Each structure stands twice: as C-alpha cells, then as structure tokens.
Length: 468
Image 1 (cartoon, helix red, strand yellow):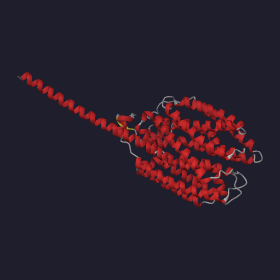
Image 2 (image 1 turned 135 degrees about the vertical axis):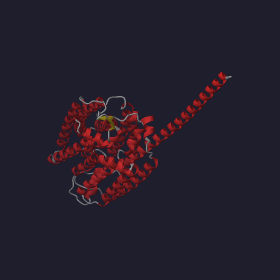
Image 3 (image 1 turned 30 degrees about the vertical axis):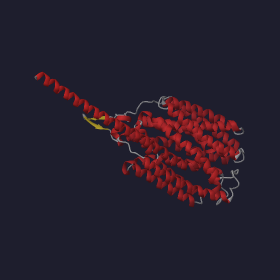
Image 4 (image 1 turned 60 degrees about the horizontal axis):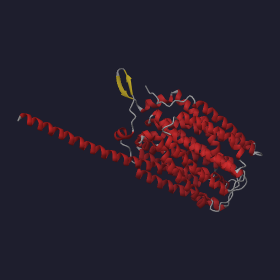
C-alpha cells in the first residue's frame, strides 16, 4: 500500500508541474503575440513619422520656386543663394540630434515628438511671413532643430523590437515613406505650386504673382500635414518593454565594468565619453566627411543644372518622381542585404561608385538619358547608404547612445555639405560667364573626395565598440 501511495504522489506532482509549465507556455505565447503586435505598431508609427519629416525635406526639390518666391521682394537674387538653405538645415539637424536624446530622457518619447512638431510649425509660420533670404537661413536652422529633436525616437523604438534585423527595419520604413513621398512630391508640384508646368528661369525673372501665392499655400499645406502625421504617429506609438525586447528581440547584454573588485553597470554618460575620446569615432567622422561631398553636389545642383541646360519642366518633374522610386528600390535591396554584408565592403563599393559618377556626370549635361541615369544612381547610393549607416552605428556603439554618437558622427556630413556649397557658390559666381566650367570643376573635385573616403574604408572594423 505504501508503494502505491508513493507512486500516486509522484504522478500528482508531475501533473502539477506539467500543468504549471503549460500555463507558463500559454502566458509566454500571449506575451510573444503582444510583443509582435506592438512591434508592428512601432513600425507603422516610424513610417508615419518619417513621412511627416519628408514634408520638410520635400522642399529641396522646390528651391527654384522658393528663390522665385523671394524675388517677389528682391529681384537681384540669383539661384546660388538657394544652395545654402538645406545644407544649413542638414548641418543643424546633425549637430543637434544629441539634444533629441536629452529631451527623450527628460520628458519622455511622446512629449519629445510633440516638441518637435511645435518647433517645425513655428519655423513654417515664420517662413510664411518672411521676406528675406537671409532670414530664411535662420528658419532652415530652426527646421533642422525641430527634425533633430524627434528624428530618432520612432526609429530606435522600432529597431529595439527587431534588433537582429535593424537594416531591414530601416529599409522597410524608409521604403514605404519614400513611396508616399513620391506621390506627395508630384501632388505638391502639379496641384499646388506649378499646375501649368511653367518653365522656370533661374537668374533673371521670377514667376508670375500666382506662383508667389501658391508658395504660401504650400506652407499652409505642410503645417497641416505635419500636425496630421504627428497625431497619427502618437496614436500608433507603442513604447517597447525592455524585458520583452531583451527576451524576444533585443539580445545585446549590458557590459559590466570591474572597479576595485566591484561590478557596476556602465552608465550612458561613461559610454558617450569613452566613444567621444576614441580614435575610431574620429575616423568614422572623417570617412563620412569625405564621402558626402559628392552626394551633396549632385543633390543640391542637379535640378538647376537641368534648368540651365534647358531641360523641359515635364522632364524634370518625371526625374523627381523616378528619383523617389530609385530611393525606394535602394531601401528594398539594402534592407535585404544590409544585415548580411559587412559595412566595410558596402562603404568601399559605394565610395568607388560615387567617384565614378562624379567624374562622369559633367559629360552627361547635354544628354537626356545619361543625365537621368546619373541622378537615379546617386539617389540609389545615397538612400542605400543611409539604410545601413544608422544600424551600423547602432550595432557598434549600442542603441542607448545611438542618438548622441550617431548625431556627432553624422554631423560630419552636415559640415562637409556647408563647405561644399560655399565652394559651389564661389565657383558659380567666379565663373559667372561660364557656368559650364564651374559645374564641371565641382564634380571633378568631389570625385576626388570620394576616393579619399574609400581609402579610410579599408581600415574600418565591424566589431562592437569595447567600453572596458
């Protein structure tokens, strides 16, 4: 009898353990489904947020309209003054991204997104009443600050859910936003700014008065659009649970530092200081400093070059749309391969291709198809590179200081862009009677910069940054 009771006792214990384990599995399954649902919502939030910021960058394609808008008050302005508008925005964004990390820590992610919106709406309100191109430069820096404050919030959150597929998340979110951006781009130019597809004149005249009024309509449209996308971003925004992201997606472990036989978790402040004093960080800064001039020359000048060489307005509008599609293709391709190929090899290849494009671009000015091929190529390389750059910095330095270190390293692109446009402004005015020579010299020099960046790429490593 004792033996039977002993066996029955063991069977009951096993059943209780089995039932307990089954309940735990069901609980984990529910947590996993909830994690996946929140991860999908974080991606949707990131797409909407990115698309909202694209409404600011979309003006880059319409600088000719902005300069014409300013000629309503000052008919002596030349297009070369427009070179400085977006480089100032990009530099301010790059330099102030760490501020976004500060606000995120102090007031939370949702309030940071709202603060970003308020700054951008303030900037566009000032642009509506502005009458001076030099005041526009200040407004663009304010736009840059607004973007920087909230730029990385949704990206970091989306990547935290899928740490092993960071490049894919970057690429996918950018792809959907870029496709929407292509449609928005055509809508703005064809419906709001230039419904009659009038051909612009860069140097001597401004558009008719109705074009001037249309630019004011564009500013109001962008303000409403920013408010709408911000509300949708906040409605779909789900802050990740650190416990869940560690278990299901965020597999990086915290580093431990030994000091007098005591173990302490490395603080965020210590990580930032360690990274800032590193030669590796400085080398990455230089790599990007020499990499981006070629891109900036093309992005800032391809449309005025097209107008200067008398490209039809319909042709330029088509090129703008295809540019967005090329960016989307880059997002898809780099999202699929970005997590599998080492950043070093991607960087070397892209630097080499950029130098070839820069050296060959001056020979395509008078030919339609080679001209558009060069522009689409630069769109692919630019957006494809940005898809892998963010996740790479996130991987080697850690997601917790990504905003700060990524912003500091990325500021090299903004600094190089400012230097580029100052040089371009000087060349265009120096060769005022022969712009063909100015444009050619720009691209030959920028091609040399790409080769220098390729040299730095050979010495880059793909391992994680060591804090101890």
